[in-house]
Image (cartoon, rainbow, N blue to C red; front, side):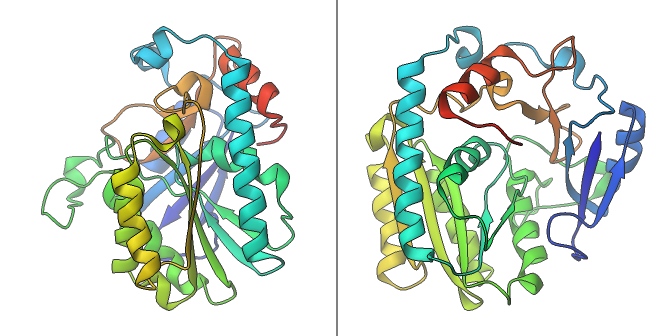
Length: 288
């Protein structure tokens, strides 16, 4: 499989080193490194089993999951509306899309079908708050605690800053449940002064048509009013069933203690699970 590895000091946009790995051991020897801030393992021709017993159905979204085409079409429709609104703003300007793993991954893959991608580069930061760096690495958050993927948002943003001069827009895409995560990510973008380099557009897909996120969305809009954000676009859908459903997402972590390192979620036949295939069929995704 193809492994993208990133360091604090960027050499390239998407990855700083790229490897073809053929076993879990090969993968682990590369990612278990204090200098690696994040990585993504993409399935290619050399697919192998990784994840093992950790991939149990733990969350209610996984245990009780049933494909629902009507729900999926609500997701698709909202993404299509977001794409149309975003295209109106960016037109043919050069953009970098910042789509955090895991939640924004299916949103961007759905939205991108309806956008002119000629001048768009997509970047997948790995920022999950429940994944910790190994304690022995001594990587600590701003609060002095063992750092998580949440802290890695700062590292990913700082890594990108030297590469932003050729872009006009920084398009941050994410899911919205309560909106707290999006609000936090935006706060960190402002703290790292991304807005001094280019215009930030926040784009959110909201669960339950936004009923649960009014307060945080109002706070995000304050950043538009004060000029920190160029704009905030959001649309609601019936349910963000992709939230906490690793079999539908097709991506996860081997465990929660080795840092923000994305791996594919594959079945015993080294293929994606039916959940992902059926969802992608409904929302028309046909590429990585």
